[in-house]
Structures are given as C-alpha cells and as structure tokens.
Length: 506
Image 1 (cartoon, rainbow, N blue to C red):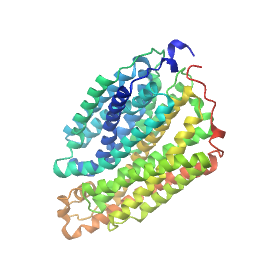
Image 2 (image 1 turned 45 degrees about the vertical axis):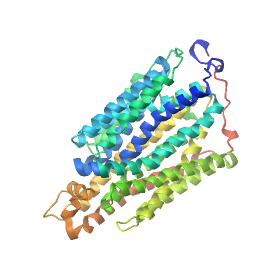
Image 3 (image 1 turned 120 degrees about the horizontal axis):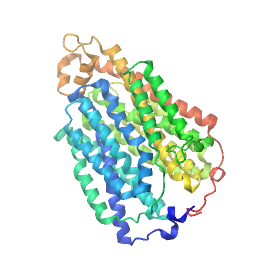
Image 4 (image 1 turned 30 degrees about the horizontal axis):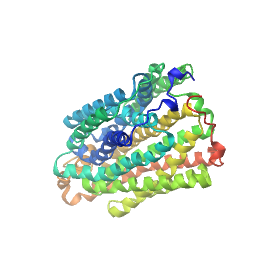
C-alpha cells in the first residue's frame, strides 16, 4: 500500500486523556442525536397518524427514512475518505436538523414522509462516520473499551426514548419529538467544532456515483411496488435497475458493494440473515405500537413502555452472545438467537385486545433477546472473516443489509395491513365512519374513540385480527433465517473462520 494514501500506526495522533474524553463525549452526543430520534419517533407514529390521517402511508414513514439513511452510507464513506471525516459529519448533522425542523412543521402525511427522507439523508452520515473517526484516532485495544460507551448510548436512548416520546406527546404535541433534535444537534456540532481536529490524509478514490444512483433507484422502485402503488411494471423496472447495479458493480474499480465478498458462505449467509432480521426488527417495532394504541386502546405512554423491553433484551442477548461465541463458535449461538426470534414472533399471534400490557412487554423482550443473540455472531464473524483492508466495507454492508431488510419488510407489512384493513374494517359502524382508514385513525386518537361508544370492541378486534395477519410476516422472516442458518451457515470455531489480518500499512 502506498504510504501517501494511508495512515499508518506511527502516524496516528496520540491525544491526551483530556482530549480523548472531550472527543469521545462529542462523538457520543452526536450519536445520541440519531439514537434518540430513532427511539422517540417510533412511539409517536400512531399519534401522528391519528392527527394527519393517511394510515395507508404508515409504513412509508418508516421506510422512507430507512431507505435514504441506508443507501447513502457507502457514498458518505467514500467522500469522507476524500475530504475528511469532520466536514462530512457536520454536513450530515446539518441536513438531519433541517429535516427535523421540516418534519415538525409538516401538515400532511406526504409532507412528513418527504421530510423524513431528508432526515435520513443526514442520518446516513452520522453513525458510520463517527465509528470511522474512532478507528482513525484510537488503536484497536482502546476501540474495544470505547465500544462499550457507544453501545451504552444506544442502550440508554432505547430505554429513555420511548418514555420520553410518550411524555412529549402527553404534555405538548407530536411536533416536538422532531424539534427536540435541534438543541441536541447544535450542542453536538459545537462540541465537535472545538474538540475534534483531524489531520486529513488525502486518499485517491473513485466515487461510485452510478452504483449509488442505481441502488437507490432500484430499492425505491421495489418499495413502491411492495406498497401497492403500481402494477407488475414496477417490479420489472426495479429488477432492471438492480440488474444494472450488479453489472456496474462488477466492472467498477472501487464499487460501493464489492461482490467478491459474497464468495464466502459465512458472509453471504450472514448478510441474508441480517436482511431478514432487519425485517423482523423494524416490522415488530413499527407495528406493535399500532396494536397497543389501536387494538388495545392504549396511550402513547403505554406504547413507549411496550417498546422499551426490546431495548433491554437486545443488549442482554448481545453481551451473552459475545461471551458464548468464543466458547462454542458462531453457529450454535446464531441458531439459538434465531430460534428465540422465531418463538418471539410466533407469540405475536397470541396477542389480543385484552392481553395484559406486561405480557406484551415480555413478548417484545423475547424478540429483542433473539435479535441480540443473532446480530452479534453475524457481525463479529463477518468482521473476522475479512482482512483489515475490507473490514470497514464488510461491516457497513452488514448494517446496510439490516436496514434495507427493514425497509422492504415494513413496506410489505404495510401493504398487507392496508389489504386487511379494507377486508375487515369496511362496513363497521357504517352510519358514522365507513372508511377503514378513518376507523383506524379514530382508534389511535383517544378523543376519536368516543365516536364508537359501546361498539369500541368491534373495530378493536377487527384491527387486532388484521395485525395478526401482518405479524405472520416477521414469523416467516425469522423462520427463513433459521432455515438458512441450519442449512448454510458453516460450523467451526472462531479461529477456524478468522482471516489472516495484515497490518494496516502492509
């Protein structure tokens, strides 16, 4: 490797303890911006639908953000290599805050979906660039210790976020779940400006813009098709765009998705498992709030309480998996996690309008535990199966797989929900609200529930039945992932699957 195009260990700046603490605090605050938004907004979604209407577009509130925040990750990484990490991170935060303000001002569901996509464009730069900065500044031993701090940011946000979102809605309005990002983001930018000073080493990279455009267009078109916004022609267009993406990637010197990585079964199976797990994760966290607030007549605070156990089960499973894989290898832990996820998603079928909230919380915690047991062996196995030069892109593609799976899964579940709502809710209380979308909207609005008086249980039961059909999809995704793990994920110890790790400057 050309010494002019890489930073060697000897060139790595050694910050003082005070500088280290300030930089880490700045990066943690920037990461908290994305983490809190992700957990607060989920709690507010049913209330937003109750206010703005457009339940048929519900899944797009989730999918639009996931799509833009995911497909831009590889592109931001390439640009950060060319112009430096700090300007890219600052740009991402500014764009994220712009999207947040616009979301808070949105007056329709279409506007909100558009502005969530703008938020996602900024979010795509935040997390990957933060971890790139950590890799630039600290040797691997320090990175291992610091990882606990950054994981703690997500864990804390996951516990605080849902309750905070419910509280904001209770005392103010849903608009403030977006406005609250502004002071946090400005504080993060101020701290980064004063505490993080990078030494830019110019690297000569070709940015794969054609690949990025084809990937974004192909996934967007597929989401439109799954959202039932068009006929079979959309699927053909999506297939053509994604086929063009594969063609371009196979001939580009520095593709955003190196196809050679997929030659190893451990890696391609891991990516597929991450894709399916993302559909389970985002599908569960996206549609459980509809069940709690719609079918059960809960409040935004109860929605936050129900989502919190997933954020507890996940880190418990993750920490447990980290210890077990060294002893038993990746495959047994992965299969245990996928089996637990199957049990958790199967239990979703047992939920009823009268199911006690603690039991719903236990169910969600079981899904979170399975997610933690699954994600850790997949991530560590992929990172250790490649050399140093490919570890960054391999790790980014794992995150890409999970969030793209979430986008596609949520879009598909939203399409199923729309069909089920039409079939089960049409004609209910016809004298007042014959429109299924209006029925769901009133169920999500505590004031609107009074329209049904003694008939409240009828639309609630119909909504629960519609969501039971929707919840069959996470169960199917988890089952396919388990079958993949059993049939295709290679056995062996951690050392058996470890690639030779050349030094960064080799």
